[in-house]
Length: 81
Image 1 (cartoon, rainbow, N blue to C red):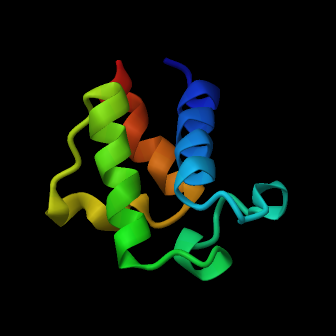
Image 2 (cartoon, one colour):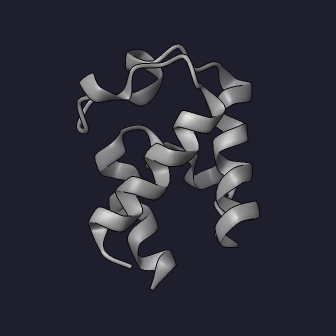
Image 3 (cartoon, rainbow, N blue to C red):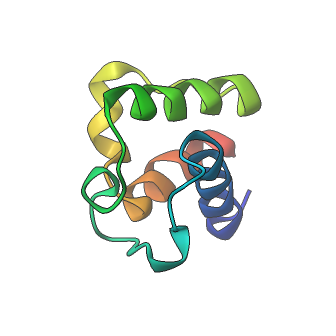
């Protein structure tokens, strides 16, 4: 899966977890939780959806790798290979 595909996967999951958020203004290098109104449960929902939809496991010690859209893509792309 390409980085563009992985980015779209993450955006699709965020859109489902936080349907009221405007993702069109999202800056890919900035922290997601600061840009969007995501609480810790929303973040866990994103991690759970990655596992449920794509069988991608993210251990809790790696959650920091999911801080921004760019870091999500960098961390997840090898897991989709």
